[in-house]
Image 1 (cartoon, helix red, strand yellow):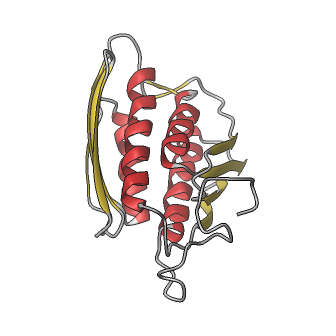
Image 2 (image 1 turned 90 degrees about the horizontal axis):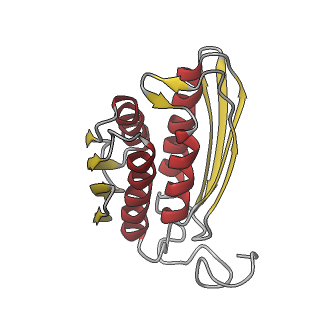
Length: 202
């Protein structure tokens, strides 16, 4: 089973995460931020990636450090669980509808981090969480996981639906991308023979 655990401690946060790529979508998540917990549970359930996260942070200041650092730690565990990425399908994409909302996510587990975020919100907060922090989480995850991630909300009105469709889109895309390709289980999915180095022609 492709699994990894990461712990990270700074003056702002203490976070541990375990990621199991070949799981069933089982999760235990506690960040101290209710809405972020809900999104990470969706990420686990719809990707079938097992996820355990425990975070303690300076929430008396705001939610920024805990949100960003959680993305970093989950991304690092994800990258470690992938190993050299041999045999993976590598690419994944999803269109996720939620009532009036439709979001498109496409990703490449290229080991070249990049985020395109085309998502707008009409409210500054969902619950107690600043909506601007969702981009920070996706940026931190993409950077640490070594993933190129494109997220585009095509349309929608309900802010809860918009952000949840982003996480579910990421989940479904990851589910496809981490799957071992039975026709190339021992092959590196790149003409370079390695992911993440050299020019962008992999």
